[in-house]
Amino acid sequence: MMLDPKLVNVNYTPGSTMIPGTLPQADNFQDCGTGAGWYYDDPINPTKILLCPSSCNSIKADSQAKIDVAFGCLTIPN
Image 1 (cartoon, one colour):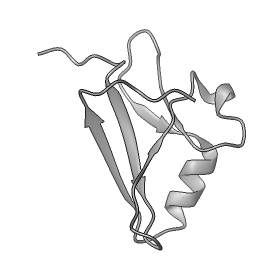
Image 2 (cartoon, one colour):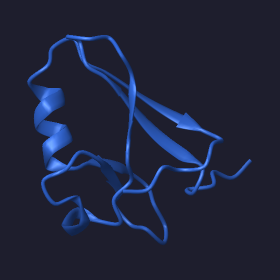
Image 3 (cartoon, helix red, strand yellow):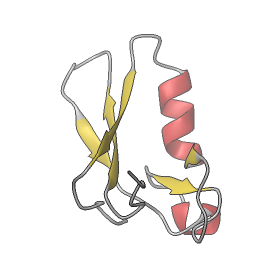
Image 4 (cartoon, one colour):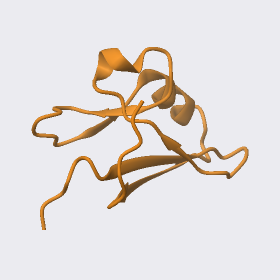
C-alpha cells in the first residue's frame, strides 16, 4: 500500500493540558512563518515530516509532549 501524502496529519498533545490538537501543514519551511505546523522535506517525493520552528521549539521545551502521526484522513492545511 502506498502512502498518500495528502492523507497525513501531525497531532501534538502538550504535557500541560493533555488535550491533543492537529498541527496544520505548511507548504515548506518558508510557509511556516512564526506559526505552528509541519511540512515535508520534499513536497513532490516526501521522505520526512519536519516541524516548523515554532512547533519544534514548543515540543522540545515540553518533556511531557506527545506527537502522533495519523494516516488516512485529509491533511489540515496551514
